[in-house]
Amino acid sequence: MSQNSLQNDSIQNPRVTWEGCSVLLDINDGDRLVFARLSASATLKIGNKNCSLQPLIGCPFGSLFQVDNGPRGPYLSRVTPSAEGNDLQETQDCQLKDEPKDNRAIVDNNKAQSLTGEDIDEMRRQGATGDEIVEALISNSATYEKKTSFSQEKYRLKKQKKYSPRVLLRRPFCRSICEAYFKKYPARIGFLRVDTLSLLLSMANIAAHSDVLVVDMVGGLLTGAVAERLGGTGYVCNAYLGDTPYPMDIVRIFNFSSEICKRIVRSPVDGLRSIQDGTSEQFFQHKGVSNSEIQSNEQMSSQDSFPHSISTEETTLSSENGMLDLIPQMVTASPPQVAKTCKATKAGENASLDAINLWKENGFSSLLIAAPELDVWSIVQEFLPFLSYSASFAIYHQYLQPLATCMHNLQLGKMAIGLQISEPWLREYQVLPSRTHPCMQMSAFGGYILSGTRICSSDSQIQK
Image: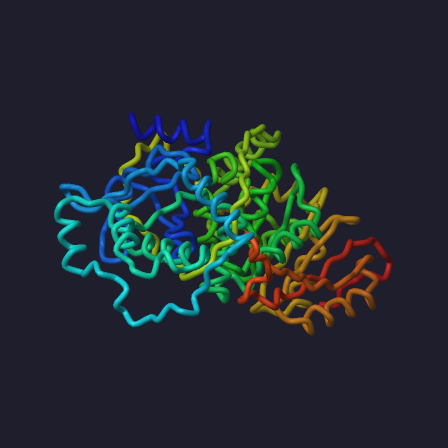
């Protein structure tokens, strides 16, 4: 009963974590990022210490935790931000205007620290916290007072990360998920950068109550981004070529509700084409779907034909720097037993016959393609006819030439207008007192996007 109540509260208040939800753990201000699924038995290894994730359940996103030592070993304790840090920052800002000290006379010979490792171990055995150890290191340093404010801040931060690591509980959003994968495993998402993803959604005119046709070969990131923007209205049809659907593992990280998962469906291109050819029943029977299942899908689709209003919360996540620990090896333990009555709807079910018939009459309102492993023009030949006239489409690819070839063929066939190839450009800045400048290491390449609007023309016959 407690687990059911937690799940119900999570749907009503998405700002609070619940057991079984996915979270993004930011360790030491971006030095390490971990996607974890919260449970009572899940643990997280920070350095050489294993900490239970149970204290994170029921806490609001954005909470800060610190690793402390207790009688039963290390554990995560919640930290409340105090006003002392702001006062210290203001004092340092005032010192920056007239800084009389420099680091030229400081010699790094490993003799400035009088506190030994045995002393630190003894403090730990006596129950000293990480903050107390950091303060002891600062007070026993012979060169700390001679350093500039910048150097003192770096020294304090370095010791805090080692002896008192902190974990920030963050909500997994489209932006944070894309940034995390792009920095550690960019090939899994086709080198799709976060600014490119946002521009891709805007150029395809993704809005509420839209029926979006998606060709997603980037792990489900594009499908999840579209579903997040729709917010439980309209449908996201993840189409694929052949008999094997493309993986959608990243969709599980978004913590979508059952209502939003119902709007994420799958369909092969043969199933969409069979509706146009009038051979839908033969196709479904060939796939092993009985008439009763088709009728049940139709009834379910008719009940969900009207969109439900869902309150969604959106927060902006800052960019991260450092090493990452990502899916598929999520920090999780054995999943808890959940009653069948509260089992969540799985995203990516087969599209119903009634929904496909509706798309046959009206067409899709948007088309999004992110398939770096396939030929762009061949995919457009397959999926562009399912798009309604005057509807927008956007195609992402890592390289320019496949998009240029596709754009040339679309112009020759008079299939679309407003064709353009865009190259996103992003520069990240470090904004600190007297230290504002572009980041030293940044991504210089974000791929290309081909966008346009489909038109109706007598000559717009796609040559198969």
